[in-house]
Length: 300
Ligand SMILES: NC(=O)c1ccc[n+]([C@@H]2O[C@H](COP(=O)([O-])OP(=O)(O)OC[C@H]3O[C@@H](n4cnc5c(N)ncnc54)[C@H](OP(=O)(O)O)[C@@H]3O)[C@@H](O)[C@H]2O)c1
Image (tube, rainbow, N blue to C red; front, top):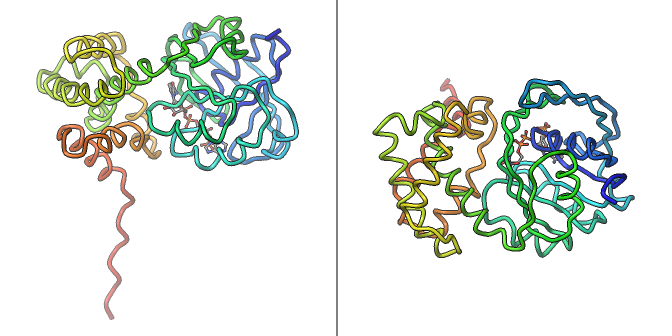
């Protein structure tokens, strides 16, 4: 039975709170490990897409306490750049499924080797954290899990979220990567909502270039579509999410690091020199987010 399951969430951010609330709603006992890494109790608040408020308990554990129990599922919902801080201790947690829903690609190989229950997930649910323990579920999407008969899938479905299992998740990971690479860097650099990419012909030309450069690399890794279908796919997302501000734009505005290394960074590592538009955007974002240089030392 999925209800009554024990679920651990590592990373109580936007996605961690969204899925934590869903698991709680489905009847699971949900615990969290946050950056503080200590036992605490709080109340979480989720605003659903219809504006309704839901309150739910947040029970925090330390990594050591999490390692002392057996879990039916563990969800690691930190950003990709925080994975290396949590994976060493998560690898010692007992669970048949340890789920990673990060955007991007290229971090899976190491995890697969270290975690017996490694499960890759891709989600188009949209969540934004508006307070320490408050999350806004901005838009309903779909979650794909790379596995079979997973407790997590049943719990998400019982909570009313769209969740599906796919034994081969790679085409979905690559499609999500394409959308992220086509939309996120440009919207972040120009600080515009997604829809502006389609409304402004100059920006749409750049999106077309990004797609044309990216598709050949993705196809080498199993992406099944050509540039025209890929562009239609991106266009459909841009139009459907026209009012949204991309996660990269939100991160930039909040002064948080950007998840570039496993998005544009991964593409550039696959085909050095072959993606000039992607490379330009990647470097501009690195310039924008580089720490300010320290002032020159005063001469006597
Ligand atoms: N949000 C979405 O709608 C969405 C949709 C699809 C995919 N994703 C992907 O999901 C991942 C998480 O995104 P997010 O938006 O949920 O990010 P987020 O709101 O920044 O949440 C990350 C959480 O991880 C915590 N954390 C960082 N280091 C930690 C550590 N060492 N131990 C424990 N917790 C730690 C952070 O703590 P602090 O609170 O202290 O910073 C924060 O609570 C990203 O890869 C993103 O691309 C997100």
